[in-house]
Image 1 (cartoon, rainbow, N blue to C red):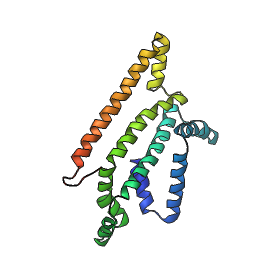
Image 2: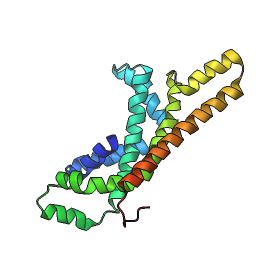
Image 3: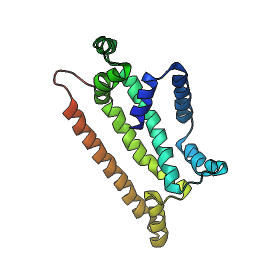
Image 4: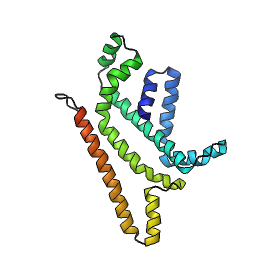
Length: 188
């Protein structure tokens, strides 16, 4: 959803806001997710904003993923013929209306493979929340391994869980991709 909001703002905003959004996207894309997480968890308290580990990890991962989603959608938008914009505008749609009702459904359908990858990435990246003491899957496996001294077995189970989640996400998105495909229109 954040990616859709960013691309919508980018398409319908005045030039100065587009410039700000471009800088924001480049900053987020240019810094590691761990640095973004550390910034939210450790730097915001200096400004008087103290967040617990979960409340720090959620926006860090969400913002990072939203920026990448918006980039996938932006590049996918370039694959939709310009005549779609022109036709919708000539029918009386506003820029926002053209985007929401004419272009976004096409863009989302085409972007499903890239968005699938992003969903799997963000699932795996959730493990970095361990760095700010959030007890997620890797942290819990560390505790179990320390109690049982069966680190290898525990990490094999964790790997299998991540693989299973990625498989379920992939299969669901493949189903969605096929369900939304248009017969006779080849999609990548």
